[in-house]
Image (cartoon, rainbow, N blue to C red):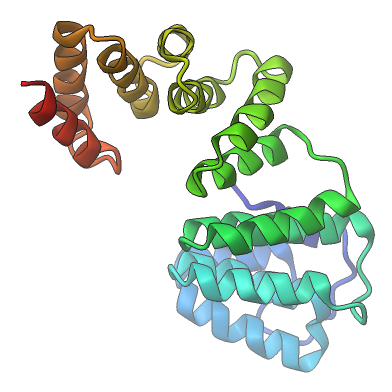
Length: 240
């Protein structure tokens, strides 16, 4: 799925002196060779590409795995008062910077960028989910729970939101509610790793050891390379 800041390129006037001159060309170039696309985007920027060129460069950096560099580029771009950008676009760019800071393991910088986005535009469902993920990464479970309460009310069919909600409930000492929410998430998406993990973790908190062991085992069999796999293995060792 294309990032929001790439979609935003379509609404901006695009100078015509570079190997990349449109959002479509940027997306195609990144798919073919992210490093070459980054170089072309930098050339586009130097030859008058403006905001679209910088957004393209950030997308190429993300594709290269340079998430912190991409986040820094977007944060600086959105904060620059000399850039001609509508408020809605600045909010999108700040939000994407927040997402990238979080992916780079910098939740405090992510929170700062998202706060800037929230000053420019009200948070939608994606913004609430990002706010919850950032709060969870900072272990600010009250803030995560507040965002997720609002999110699941607005998007009750979102399995990922339900699984995040289950995690926040569990970390807030509400294991029974976490179990119910995790089971709801599994019903919506049986293949979602976080839903299965939270179903197991909630049962472990409630002392339902046999069920928790079974579910953690199912999780590791289905998702051995998940980022949650080490925690699942640690829980199995603790419960055995």
